[in-house]
Length: 128
Image 1 (cartoon, rainbow, N blue to C red):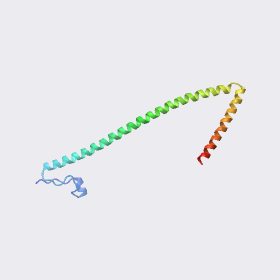
Image 2: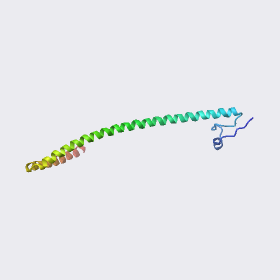
Image 3: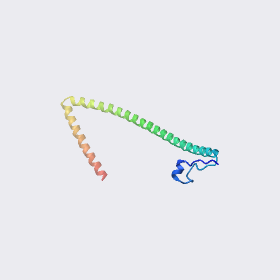
Image 4: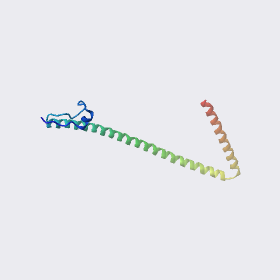
């Protein structure tokens, strides 16, 4: 009868129910026990790898979605920049073109300010 020492894990826990390697009868039994333990650990590793792979694919999909969203925002901002640039050019041309247009411009500015305050008042009343 060949005695095999108890593994470090078993010595720490001191219970044979939690030990994967206990006192064995022969070297063949030790190999079988080690083989089972190896297969169990390989299955555990395979499940962890599968989880990591699915997590990596989820991150990749999320990054692609965010890139598409940011590309859409870029094109929106580009079109808004063109629109605002054209408006500023027309406004500057109108402001530089004589006294009658300045009166019209001041009246329009005052009207926009009054409209802004009226809308903000109405919205604040609607919330309460």
